[in-house]
Amino acid sequence: MKVRVGVNGYGTIGKRVAYAVSRQDDMELIGVTKTKPDFEAYLAKEMGIPVYAAGDGFIQRFEKAGFDVAGTLSDLLEKVDVIVDASPGGMGAKNKAIYEKAGVKAVFEGGEKANVAEVSFVAQANYEKALGKDYVRVVSCNTTGLTRTLSAIQEYIDYVYAVMIRRAADPNDSKRGPVNAIVPTVEVPSHHGPDVQTVIPINIETSAFVVPTTLMHVHSVMIELKKPLTEKDVVDIFENTTRVLLFEKGRGFESTAQLIEFARDLHREWNNLYEIAVWKESISVKGKRLFYIQAVHQESDVVPENVDAIRAMFEMAERWESIRKTNRSLGILK
Ligand code: NAD
Image (cartoon, rainbow, N blue to C red; front, side, top):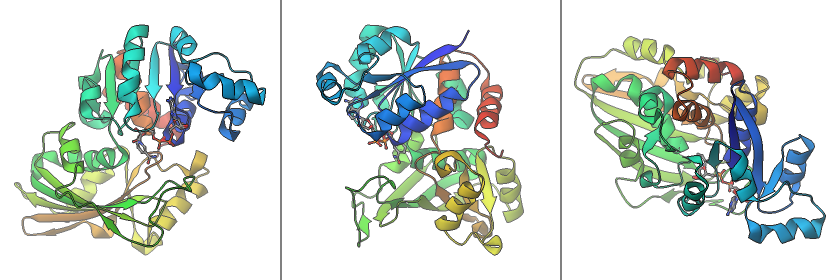
């Protein structure tokens, strides 16, 4: 029997999760919600995805435009086993009461605080923690990126300091900036370190800057080691870590621009780069310190985690079976 999935909030993350769910043979996408009849709503309908109004208050907008919705969020909730809440950050916590009342499980995203859910989730790090749970939070794009690589070398880590260079806005966002400035997150350490700790117990501190780019985030990671590790060891470990790929500057991957071009060349939907990209030449060990630099495609790295979270919540597969299934369905390279 397929798990019936709805998506509340059909934006950057919601539409990618809806697509990923529709690629699974053990899940069925029942519908998505929209707040207004914009081009995304029309396209979803054209693609055969039932579109629901995100609440009673939004119905009038659709009626005015002559856009027939399949119902409202409450109608969608009656038809699904789980709802993925990909509404703007903070809204998921408000929506939780609606899901509880409807008796529907929910996956929340990284814009929510950790206490919205029973567990904060990155599939390869703590899949089992989500088994049978009703409320799971897929952590943010940055936290997912840090957790994927750090969990692979966790046993060697004494302390991590990471600098996050964050994209200013997503490519479709014409409202946010900066256009010509570097904005430090003046709360140091930044919230990213504690967020990683919601998934893996690790000694980590971070600081963050927002820069004028839309493509990807970049992390400069510095680690104090408690057990010896060579550069080759790290390369071998990352080569064997799912959803992490090594890229070489020597092969033309000079910046995030070429990483995104690579995803385009793979004919990935929306040029998604689900994998965390580590620059191979940046992996460097100096005595007891390990350094590396990685890039995170903020629009897509969390998408496979949403699929795995659903499998864990319904105990449909064990960790590696789910990860392999999701990877195959989305063309994730390893
Ligand atoms: P988005 O703004 O692109 O999409 C949110 C969608 O929700 C929009 O379509 C909006 O119209 C809709 N919406 C607004 N009010 C709503 C309501 N009351 N009910 C239902 N839908 C409503 O946002 P996003 O970037 O997709 O972010 C969604 C979540 O994913 C947030 O928690 C965010 O922090 C997290 N996240 C975002 C990124 C990213 O880089 N974009 C990465 C990882 C996680």
